[in-house]
Each structure stands twice: as C-alpha cells, then as structure tokens.
Image (cartoon, rainbow, N blue to C red; front, side, top):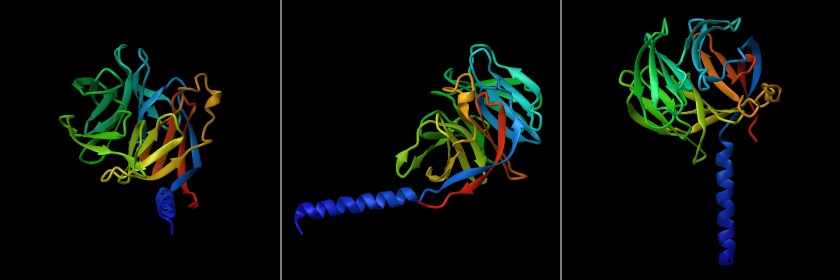
Length: 259
C-alpha cells in the first residue's frame, strides 16, 4: 500500500474513533410533568429549592434581588433588593446562610438565610455567574470552562474543575445545580444543560431542552434565555426555567436512542 494511502487510512481510523467517542455522550430529552407560574420580571440568575420554596436571585443593575418564592403560585413571599450598583448572579444555601455572587464587581454577599439580613461581603477575581454545593464544598461558575471549588466557610478557592466534552473545553457554563452526585450546568445562550462529573470534569450527558418554551414570545428574546435549575432531592423533582419566563417547568429526563 502506498505511504499516502496508509496515512489516509490512519486519519480515517482516527476520525472514526473520535466520532465513536463523541457518540458515547448520551443526550436526554424531557417530558413536562407540571408547569408553575414564574414572575416575568425575574431575570433569573440563580435558583435552588429548599423546604417547599424556591430561592431565586435575579439580575440587572438597579433591579437585582434575592427572593423566596412559593412554588405552586409563584408568589414572592420574601425579597431583598441589592444596592443599585450590583448585578445579582448565582446563589446557594450553606447551613443557616445564603451566599450570592454578583456579575462584574468581584463582590459577593452572605446573608442570614431566614431573614435575608446581610452579614458580610467577600471578594473574588473575575466574574461571578453561578453557585451550587454538595455536602462539603461550594461550586462556582464564571463563564469559562473552569469551575471553582470553594471552602464554604472562608469562600476561598481550594480546587478547580476543568470541564470538557470529548476533550474540548465547554465554555459559557452558567447556572449550576448539584443533582445526585453530578453538577448540572446551563450552557448560556443554548437550550442545553451539561451533566458534569465533578471528579473528572467530563460531561457525562447533555440535556436538550429545545422547544420547552418559545422565547420569541418574550420582549427581549436575545437575553431572556434558558437559565435556572433547581432540584428537590427528597422527591427527585427537577425544575428549570429561564430569564423572565412566565413559567417554571418540572421535567423528567428521557434518554434518546444512541445515534
């Protein structure tokens, strides 16, 4: 066989191996279980579920809030407004506290979880996008393919997770949620959620939410995108929504056949 033919064959085999590896990442669709009301004035940046309520952080300079929301009705039962110069981002609970990021100011806030009374500020480098937690650490996204692992008491970085899919960095990781040992991450400006193995940083699955809600119906469809994941661990319920969406959806995942 000519040398150039051997090279072509080698490249073809490599391409086939790469394609086969890519196909190993499963893709999940969804089934809507229930739709709940959601405030169309809530530019959702952070979301989690706790004790029957949703806790939500909303963005936009001059309009950012932290709020406690009744799931069934969408009623805001408690609210804290950020100082006007801050653009609110992700939130997470830790013990009796609530931790919140802001976008480009490098400033985060710690509140009393029950009253939303501010307790202290903290600083970090770069942008703040989202937060979630397991039982020992907080996880922070900043729009890059790298998740920061934080000590929940000092809020200092103790480790970093480089997120990849098929060996390629996954950018624009946004809202985060810890779900049964995995990190779920909205990929900003897409209809996809990445399922991430926190030990390796590898994407173990994609959740495709195409068609869940028609954002062209919204006043600003360019910005009012999918963003917001909450998990009810006790009842195994997964909730998703978007910025200024009129509904929050409880969904079940449906694995698609391998291609």
